[in-house]
Image (cartoon, rainbow, N blue to C red; front, side):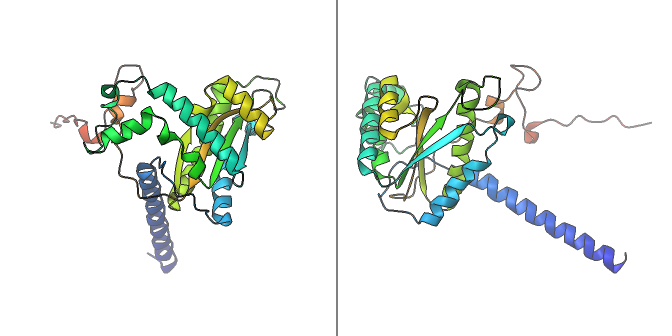
Length: 259
């Protein structure tokens, strides 16, 4: 092997190792991301926030129409409290009538001593007041009509999807920087709340607010949450009902020896 080829081989191997490391870091970031709802109210550096916001621009959208708009609420503490009030009211309505036993399957991963308190915060809605302690509350909006395409792209199929991908891009960047993030749609479940928020923020009716994405300084580290369903529980192969089998559990067929 010539010296040039040797150097090229080493270079490619180094690039491969770097790529593998980057992939592993990304996978770890995805697995460790959590919703952190308890924030301190502290301000995060402007340059950090701008880096987080910029990540949303790179989300995909049909025909690159980018049918998303984000209203950043940072200085208006009154608006944060209004969104927190609406969130608590909506959450109390949603969870207030649930029997305690209804959520045990979802809270199994929590220590026994922590479950009653957490469930009580869900029932009285106080768990969802975190927008008032976030540094930035981002109201995420989508549109079915603001674009130059003659085709209709409904929020149900497109707008909400591209906004969600933009939010997740911001979430991963913020998580990598050690910030707390949480996403909630309960303030926008009631059309009356939507109208009220649109009036307060000056959002035109061609745009629909879908959720509030909150970013702030975590009050404390979040405990690891529950594991997700295995691939077999969420993916089918070729046809519905034919579960995907992970590589580790596939039985290799023994090849017959050739005579």
